[in-house]
View (cartoon, rainbow, N blue to C red):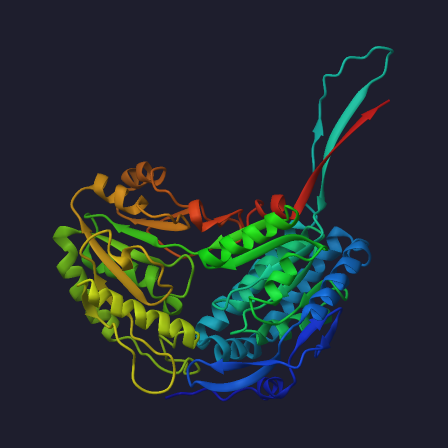
Length: 497
């Protein structure tokens, strides 16, 4: 095993007392409670973090509001973009440090932490930075009649909504935080972030780098704690103007209700799904197997847009599953700090136990577990990549989100049946079509009920392309230019002269 030695700065960071980051300073907090951060690969406690209280929420929201009305409001759009670019530079400078911290907390492989978690976050920062000087309104031609020679003109302008509360999941703690804070800051908002209690450390380090990048105190704040205490306090806070949440559908529905019931607080909800991947009969089996691994097993399947339902032509099913089993059996599973590891542990014990429960549910329903389906003995929350052959579209694992390295497979005989099965879900985050017949794919795209449809690819995100779900998978969009609508208010101005 080629286990990486931790950088001295990583070891030193783990030994620090961890709490919150408010108004440009580390803050221990008033409470006495701590929660433990567990390395999912070893089940060892690597740090303790102070549990946030209402006092820390109040202080963070007040700091964000003061900065919104003060220092950040006085910062020019160009300088806002410059701040984000400098932060991107610092992420790249400290890439290995941040990647090691992330891998220790979440269990994702070190290669994925480097390339996707930190490297991609820097790229997204640069994309958002470019928008800072391009947020604009429009001039309008009005048709009001003139009675005494007066004239009229009208225009619109976009103004930042205010203080944003960002609630972050555990699967990509840096990257998803960057999506939210970069969108907020680009539009002139300030933000208070609540990382997941499973992965609270990396953003405490990133926000120190944000200060080094010249972002004024109070613009980005961190309050750590549980979803039942800190999250609701942020959502219901009188200074909160917008909530942005990424996570599960049940939690997202609760977040949306709480925001709306309080004072019609704006929400962006990027929720999960039961994403489908459809492979058409013109593809060779080897290409189908490549696509399945890409779509379903990256980061142990712990990606909201990952495919979980796989639709294979009946004539190809047996051969596809046989080759897939062979390929998955060769993946190296082990320490995520080993650079040769291809699959690490699940991110936390609660999720590990959920996945084991779903395996049992599949067995009780008589599904065939072609490969995997059991824990790996020893320390850590390891399960193998799993193949489950469903009996019908009504099986539990064709309906319930697993968020793990679990592919559930169902055969089909004609493409009308395929479209019906793809859409037979309350979710609508993402889907993919795999075929050499581009004409057929283009005709099928509009019939698939999903916020994103990939063709011959899956899970790839680009900052220029809006991302978000339909149906129960969310409200609003991230990236592209679409984010501007969700972080600004449109003001209309009419002038008589």
